[in-house]
Length: 85
Image (tube, rainbow, N blue to C red; front, side, top):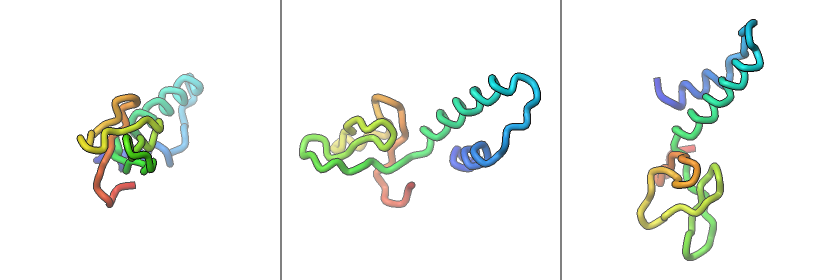
């Protein structure tokens, strides 16, 4: 199973825990948030000359020349390929 498949399952499955529903819900949302950062996303083109791309999650500048694999601020996985979400 890939991170993307697990993310789809977690976000489309209703919570059915009877005990500690609030704590389970909070933990599930934290897991979904962490898992979503593992799915590579395309950088957003900013248009500025110094830092032409920003992180799709937090909006911080990404090193376009080095083609970083993760945002140094939030940890979002970044893909410079054209076929990702």
